[in-house]
Image (cartoon, rainbow, N blue to C red; front, top):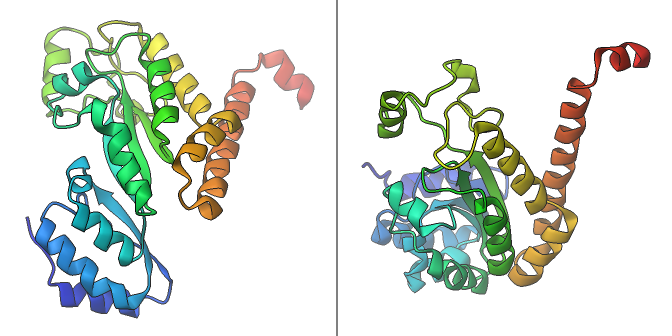
Length: 257
């Protein structure tokens, strides 16, 4: 793992005319001391910034305090699932579901919003995972989410296992995008049930009522958080309309034309 000299980063940020900055780093808090030194150096620049980190950063109060003082408005976290069994099966048991609410409260206490990566289709996921996820995210006040279906990319243990078990059903690599297709047979549901559950959870998460519930708990950056959530909602509404139009009967398509 390589780290750019902090003076280089500060010089680059200073040269960027925009006030908002994204640090495209997979885990900005991977080296806590580097992160703290960077944040201290950013404080005088008075910028707003976002990046990505892990739940471990939330356990370091000094990191959150310095991040907030240096202009951090939001951080992306890979929460992945509300099922501890699913997290253990994916070798991510260092994420502890019972801590989600308390850790988000720490972020929010510093005025930092959280966008989480959430994923459906783990081996241990059952049909109730979709509603459980939507309910838990409302309870903990998650600000935003990037929601996906698990993709068994070639070269990964998941791909090797599913291939050996004869559970891969689609070899069109265009469909390995985590959004539009399920390319394998899940263990506890059908591919169609997984895709439908994913679509339902995504739509529920960004419904106006759920946005209100989540942000009423978060109370973080509402001046930009509310418009951002509504933007996702409008985008999903457009997706639903597009899919409905795409699957209209041929005679209806012709009549409309």
